[in-house]
Length: 168
Image (cartoon, rainbow, N blue to C red):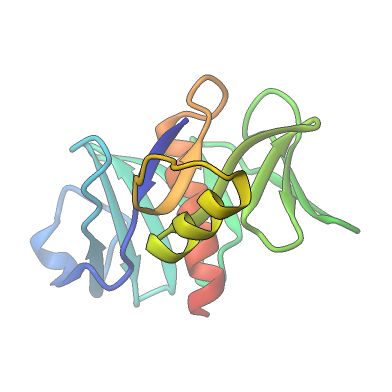
């Protein structure tokens, strides 16, 4: 499992005029600074149209609404189905991507392929107590995902989707 750490307070305020190569951006934007991703990926929140944009180079990877719904992913328009246990996205990858009711766990079939969360010293200590052994402490806060099923672009899209739903 790979991890993308994310701190939503870590951003810079820009004007889209300084980013002419990124055509969909207009007006005031925030660029989120995410250290654990490839340098080609850039994440922006546009206040002009209240959308989140994820770019890979100059190409749009995904567009999300201000409340986290994925409008476009790699030139596909994913279909969102609301179900009893959460929601399901079609067209994002092979199979149906199921999102738990809490929005923090992602499944393909019955297999857990990613989760959004964190581990700090308190949650680590509780986990050690429950397992009756000392585990390695690796703090993280963001998304942990199975890179054999979910690529970095989709993991980043799912992370921003959850952050946007919390932020709206």
